[in-house]
Length: 268
Ligand code: NAD
Image (cartoon, rainbow, N blue to C red; front, side, top):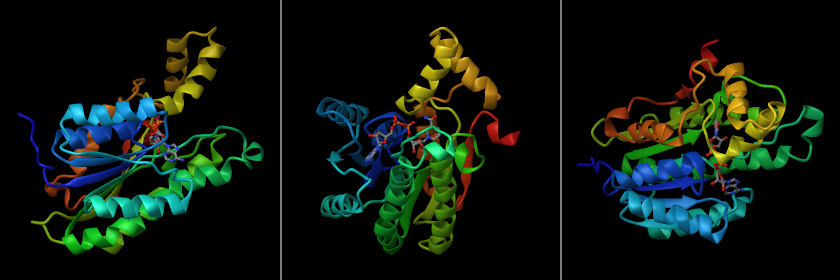
């Protein structure tokens, strides 16, 4: 029988119409949480994401239609969420990637920083005070190995991910004394994945596949061999299992961490 330890809790997961965010929304729903999902996509993609969470067993699923590049849209999403339910778990998973040398990143910078970093700040600053009042809260920021080490041609992305790791540590310190061991406290952590098989990295896979005569598997192997020593992609549902554990009461003292899930990438 599934352990519904999140029954009575509500989670808001940004960027959950796809990839890691969707896998986390499903996992939290499966374990009893009401889930608020958010993200871009066609009406069909959004309906499919809602249905996937319902099928997983989420007792209530709500879609929040906010483009996170716009702080006013974030405020409106948080106001709508407050009408729905207090938010116990915030997962900031929305993110974009733009690859080019620094001199080619001028048109990308503002958007990458706004979606990958500022949106998380706005959601956290809006929701953390209420978590403190209730003595329980979890913020899980989906950062990246690129919040720990750099790679070429990813200047705004790396800056945004180092930024979210730093932001999370400040928030962890500011809220560390909230609640107690029984209530579960308030924690703020980052998960730092290496390569995860989602649409986000598809253009990078395709670029490598093109160097191997269109062979996708060879392109993936090439990407992995460069930096991820396990030479295995992580699956989104594997990241979701870690996010799930961070939501447990027992995780009350795991705080301010940036946890790599990278096959050894950042151990080199
Ligand atoms: P994805 O492309 O599958 O999902 C990204 C999600 O963000 C989608 O739901 C998309 O609609 C949403 N989004 C993008 N722009 C948005 C906007 N303006 N407003 C609202 N939502 C928006 O990618 P993913 O791999 O699941 O990425 C999730 C997070 O994981 C990102 O922050 C990414 O940086 C991080 N990450 C991914 C990998 C990887 O290899 N896939 C590795 C490390 C970190």
